[in-house]
Image: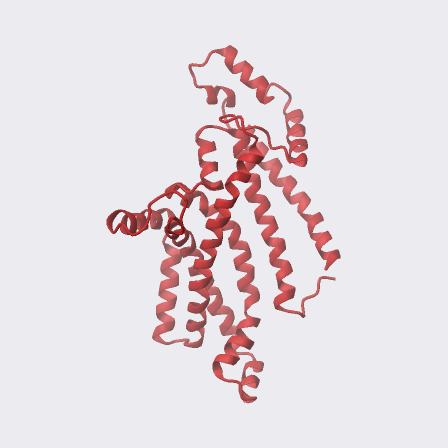
Length: 306
């Protein structure tokens, strides 16, 4: 396990280096002068030149790239151009809100998808199966940038049951979590159904029934556990997608997380903060993939990391 972990951590270094390089290139390949864009077209040339020196944009591109990588290696992501706050500190203050929303969305998705997938698999071909499949397809087809405003209009504006924006109470979390978790629930439900159906065809399930195990016990204790590996894989991979989807959801519901911070920094042309937010999301993707691989050994002892 330790050798595998060290090897995987070593393999993440080129990935993170590639992400950092791509982020740096995208920011610097944008047409136009970033300093001029930040100050406006009417800004004096002296002010533009001063800002370029402050940002280091007057240096050769290779030197800028080296300084950027050196800063990332030290954990120094630069300083926000709008607030003069260190980028790393600005991101860390928003991380709890984003993790709270992501965890709530995942709970919504898992709480809906797993029972729905099990019921659909056990009742294959019945009305319940068709209904579950229809709900899953509907959830996958509805984008969160449409579902979010619809939920806000229905439950916050018209009915007044829930707050429409902000963060502070559990009630503020309900609408963003449902909006963000709906599509993931649909994908997980279909994966749970497909994976469980495959396991139910295996001889060991019939053997468990022959030994006197009840149908629910044979399904839940034997077949369902063995069907979890693809489901866990999807959960781990989709966690990064939840963070990405949070960009839209946090903006709709004014949720003070990383996604909203990214949109605000783009609007203010705060390039250091844009770079920091994108790097944070990328590191989260890589970390979740590694964690997912390690969970495999817990679910299936046959898996070894030698």
